[in-house]
Length: 459
View (tube, rainbow, N blue to C red):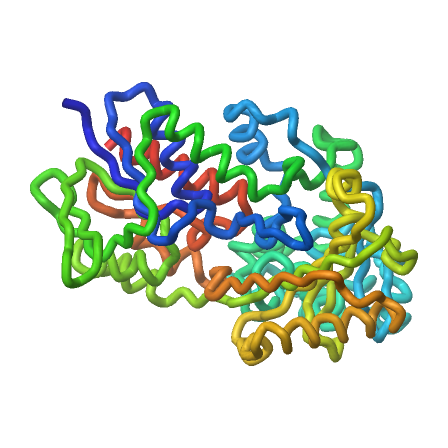
């Protein structure tokens, strides 16, 4: 009889782990235990005015290979699509400014490229970077940029970009974890501007020159879990939904997973377990079998957010002349970004030529008050902010969808990497994966899941 492996969690990390296990060629019986009634985690489609569109993550970083490799292995690479040519913009001091080209997480490669978005005085401060020797240990991205390039660069360039990735604050987020190339420069005592210029040159002339930065699938990125679930079934992987894992304990050289309600607990033994759920439930599962790892995971905070999607009748309004905009926290707006989906994704515009879709993001770490509104008030706030930026003539929506992501994004606080050291020394046959560890993007989560699968295979 072959070995049995449980994957706890059916988000993209858990599905990637199950895929790696299922195609390994080993004699395995793989079971995915998903606590909700659907797989996919933060990848989700919803019906908005008769169209199925993404209401969670909508793209992957195309310059990392993991997501596109998985798409190719699943046989749906023909559906890969990329954003249209329109660039994004940043709201600053009430106006919209084109997103500067050649920035490294907001650090400009050319100070002149941000003149206007920043004042002349702020550009002068940026251009004369203050390098005062090597930085020892981890620091926040914001504190590093503040000291080197001035607070305005953090406030108006770095903050909106990091908020788009983490829904957090630049002065809380680990440089080592979020922007390791900037952290490495700080440790070496090198200028950040020099690193940003090198990155811009590599992007223009290197192996990725000319390649799109982002990618998705025709039909929405939310179709990826659907395709993956069908492929797993074809490979003999069992996916159980609405099955909550409540306990984990050692049993000889294997593991017992407890599921079900407290009034009817079901125990099942597996030879190995991959845990692919967020930090808090993982901490609870590990509290007896790996207490140090459980304590480390319990310290990770998460940000909640909401995506408000609007459907407008008619073609794209002229004012929507970019792919969307980012909002620094210095602006007096509640939303932190808006994506003009029908502009950004040509497949969506072609599929629904008589409608325009756009969405707004609400919520930053420790700013949950912005989300403590009923859906209709959240819609009103988002629409008011959109009209503040785009003008009062933005049409009333024909349909609206609100998707809340409670505890959706882990926060990589300063010292995150060293704090999680106990999670890298687990007993044999147990592995962890997901956004809490080495990256919140879809490619990073896929890499994490596949690495966890290989770990339990080899041990």
